[in-house]
Image 1 (cartoon, rainbow, N blue to C red):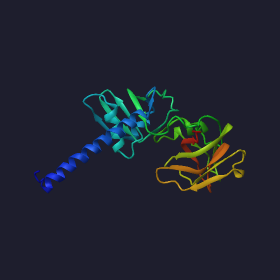
Image 2: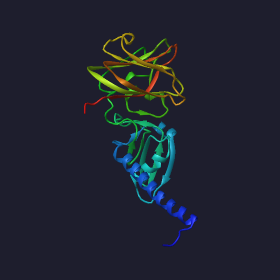
Image 3: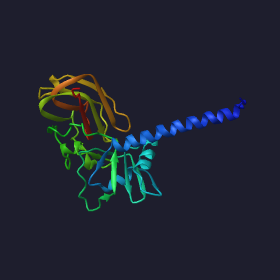
Length: 253
């Protein structure tokens, strides 16, 4: 048996690992496409352009190639195809989004999201809040879309411990709550879950200080149980701006 030189051996091993990495990368891309939610209709407010990360042409339309590009970009939450173009966005889009009726809306052939799968129960209850700012609505916190515009956020008036709340008919076993605040209006927040209308009497987690992105993830171990989930800005005074809200519950096996 001939002896393989060190450089040749390293090249051989490198090729083997390159093949493994390519297969793993393709698997990630496939999973990203098939586990993502296709948005239909694929129409969005014009401010989506502000969240564009990358745009490039493909030889043929390929959701796999576009997904692979998204997987390589740490800030990519959402990607779209338009003819031969692939567009990557940092915008948050989930299955609740019903499309835009704006006259200047942007439209794509099809889009996929990596954020907020269809087990999100945020929109399944009655929404309430502290005093809402002018030109705002509590429902905007869970409409399924956020890029930069305040028009897709619930915004309170400036006050002490402003809050946003969703109530369900049945108790939920909650394992995770995700809150996206507007980056310009960030408050430390806590999440209260229980059966009392006043959040002061329900178990809570937090407060957590938001990063510059405004995105906070509360992993609840053990889970919290209750019909009413309240987000409270602390300590105040301040403006609570909730631009996206996700609630994941524990499903029985």
